[in-house]
Length: 282
Image 1 (cartoon, one colour):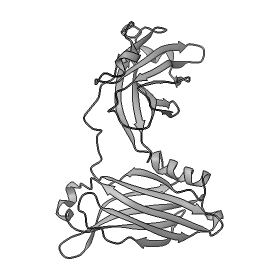
Image 2: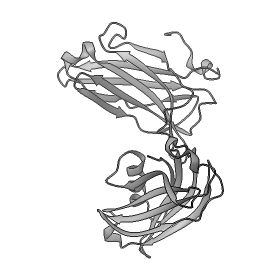
Image 3: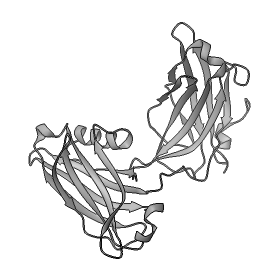
Image 4: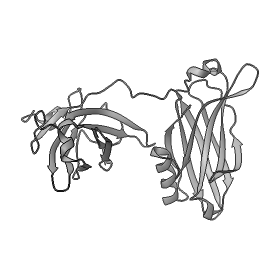
């Protein structure tokens, strides 16, 4: 692997590869992952990519990730990963390096991952090397599908705009009888724990991947925005016309992952429509 040519291999249609170097600072009790480079094919998807590192030991796990970079066949990061790890944990700890891609709607996908033992034998500290990333056909899914929506805030008008664009893979083991029926989305505006208003989209005519392209508008004073949130519930109809939930998600600063980052992006960029995919939960 030391003589492997990344520029030549970039055109190969095979598993992505990651270049890395591991070092350990005994005084600071920190593991460093540096000299990060990735080589991918044209088929790995995503317009941006980043490397996520996760160390698992007997007491739990810690994570760190690089910044997003524009994905190329050969992508290089100037920064490294810093992961706290006690020296006595090194022999039994493991490191997982994951290459993730991100599209323009902030949908994050795994391009491949590499699992390394930190006992110092299989992966010598201080030695830079290439490793082939293991890939899977698709990432595990929670089974409820995803929803694509945009949010924006107009400060001059005190208006919060939520645009429900479409949903994907609305599979639910508990609600198979609902698939094939019309679906809608109920949107609830909350301030802290208090429900302020709720509105519902029209019913869409597609059973698995419905499309709404519908705007929901709420009046919301600027000083309430930080502590407010939006809850979304995708609803199907059974034979009797009764509504049943197919999945839900919540956007706001009290959440985590993409649901929190979407709200943060809206706060930083008022008046700008920002669209993201979100996983629905049962």
